[in-house]
Image (cartoon, rainbow, N blue to C red; front, side):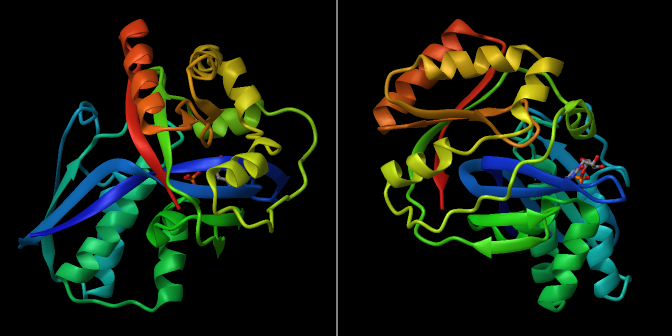
Length: 284
Ligand code: C5P
């Protein structure tokens, strides 16, 4: 049995810098990962099948509509098509929530099946396959912090990002990415990746806090509870930065200490029993 972690992806900032003729938006984003995430397990079998467990399993399709099965099918073609696997997905992350759960699952199953079936597609082929599954799948395949541009395919790794105590909060509304891009108004932002070294938390916060998530205002318009999440996070002791990730609705708070993060998670949970609140860490 092969087990691969599928960590949540966090957009520390996200500038929408343009739009392609096919409707996809050009982005400039610093993406990193959380310590928490979904888990993929695979084992040899005659057919390809998917079962899903975990707190967010309910209602998810296990057939060809699931991105995990689409990713698996594509890797199977590399393996000659005549093989199978029993895939298990432990769904710990809320769905359609801006932290790349589905993309991380797809990337994790690609890694797991390449190992199980002993196939080693060329790096370029793997990345092209990942992009064909979704704009966030390539960064999830690398699993490392990076500046990401294009629609998600231009990846410039960042080393030495600090590990920062973090709390993730989702208010229980699933928001559709295309509708948030559609609700966005105004012009485009400039790409603005930074060259300063961000080895300390303070340096990282300084760089990130002068940038923004351009999708946050339209997301709050679509789901005003996201504004309440940001407010709740920003009132917590030791908060360094609170922001929405991706197209929402999940928001993240970065904290000075583990203790601050723990206390914040506890009080956000008890004040808002319907919210998903997870104390974790941001990884470079
Ligand atoms: O690639 P993915 O399936 O994750 O994208 C979902 C939708 O989000 C796209 O169909 C598009 O409407 C929007 N999107 C975008 N620009 C991006 C990524 C996603 O407009 N860079």
